Length: 600
Image (cartoon, rainbow, N blue to C red; front, side):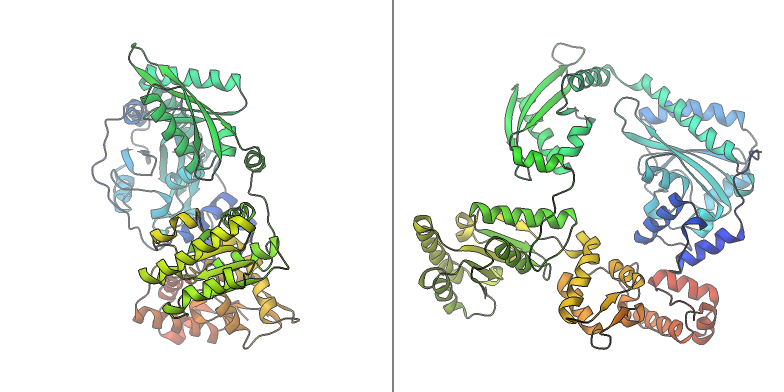
């Protein structure tokens, strides 16, 4: 038995901590390991059910791969050594799909079958929550998960230790090895044995690394020794890049460079200049790496040089530089990148299109950039959806030619018909020609993100900037909420409690910042000082359901919320008031994402 030097007991305290986490109660950092708590949070955000195992079956796994060929002898040898012991050896692919399982104990084997820890089923963290396989792959490092540390209650009598398996040359994660046993039998030997097994498999993989990969790897190392700049080596199966490439290039830019380099190799070229998705220009030098045969190409090595010094300075600084826009706040990279693009367009004098979902703040960005660049200038806004079609072109002429403003924003241009768009485009062309001669207004149009820009406007607006939805920079709520509260209750000391802020960050916000403003406006109808508490929010924002609810489920959710309020947060008392068992109310609280009020 694997019982020497046991890891601290999986006691009732940990089980209670897990239940309190699942029911939205606070959990102190010292009550559970930080790596486990972080995985619990990921599992919650992924809407993983905690009271059942419901895994996708991907079909019979493909076993004719270098990983399986390398791992099979190692696992068979270890299985023979552990014959009769209640321990299971499990190999998975990079997504957590079980490829092989060797279990020497019939009782343990039957239990693993019941929880679907079997070939063809995925134990990725997004499906089963915290577990040795999925969490090791998510963290990218060895992990052990014992007893009640598992997110799913069906796994609480098991212990598992998982270790990612990486390719010995490329470093790419190929899968994971997991050792699972009964919780009562677990000890540190389980963790050490999992690490040792993973290393044996990694060494065995060298046998299946072909000469093309080894040749490409050597060429990559030689290039890295010659320069401190961007180096990328690639072929059809793998990509290697140095730290400089990862720091200066986002994933989209990396894809553009590799695609351009592939074309260069195909055309037997040596270099080119490319423009990346972010607008950065780079000079590429691509060297083919010869394989074993004269006509065989093992891959290519790219050296890239940024041509725009300013862009290189910004990129090498790491995060996107902060920017102050009057009337707007936010420090998330997605939001700042959008603001920088609009500000750069203004500086160049480019007219531009702002796209995005309703309520994301397109007009806010346009106003903010205008006030940042020309605080004393006039800015006018025309709503194309509210102005009669036969009058819109005349309104635009007034603002741009007859009595020109400094900035004009025309909203909802995607709602215009073809004739109205053509008439407006004619006025815009006239204004642009006047502007070329003597300067003139900056023009911005706004439209929904899924709309198509009318062809009559293509030549007039060379730049389109997408304003991100709130859910893509939800961390900015810590700045946005105080700004909105200050506008709604000028002079009043109204703040947002941490618990309420947590609820707001969990909401999906389909209406984006405009919806957030309306919710806070509703709250300020009855609270205008102090701290906003969860009970002050509308009922639908005191829960975070894992899926859309039908009418019956929504009624049940609201009834449970009211029951918990009547019972002052006591779940047992609320269950009695609602006529349901304690187990049922715990499950419903989890399924509906209900935040339980603090007990009085």
